[in-house]
Length: 275
Image (tube, rainbow, N blue to C red; front, side):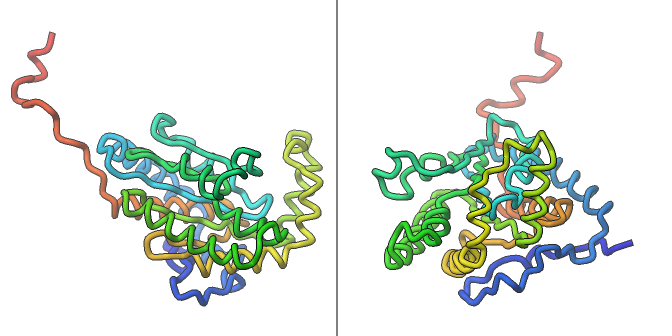
């Protein structure tokens, strides 16, 4: 039997700006027992439903989960696992693709701010404003000087969201280049996955090292006390899921949303008096 305890805090990127991405093994599981992890995940997902109901009823706070990863990193499957049992009335998932002509006519945060979760809601970003310091940096679509400014803009933007009641959790799903290759091959081997295969992903693979440098710079510039980054080993999905669920549970416990008091005197309405 493996261990029945783990510590997600080892995956938190410190605020010091001295983080090395290679320090986190992509296939780490801390020796955790898989059966225990799956039971723990089920309990956490049940607890998330209760926290969501309290968050929605309270209507004062919100939570934003940001997911970033290389292609095949598991963003979609993470969202399915974490959000599958949440009430869609209070949970919004937003995927950020290449910006439209209208979006390019505005500042890079314009399209993102509109999708920030309102009070009482959970928001999940599948990719995010960080694309503008990742793919934009790798493909040199903006100057190095502007990229540096964008790190500050992002930190200021997230500080504003935090100051107005949004808890921000940012997750990089960490995979290796070899793991990505196995997932790309799987997409070609299975007819139901052909639609997910994009030949352009093969071109991006050739820039792997450039992307890792871009991710490392992003993590070091933009992991803050109010909006921390976590680099989560993602090659063992059962471990990935329980770690992320644990981070969310602890965040909600700290937020401690509460049901609002009734707007009437409960003593005036005894249940057995209703007809």
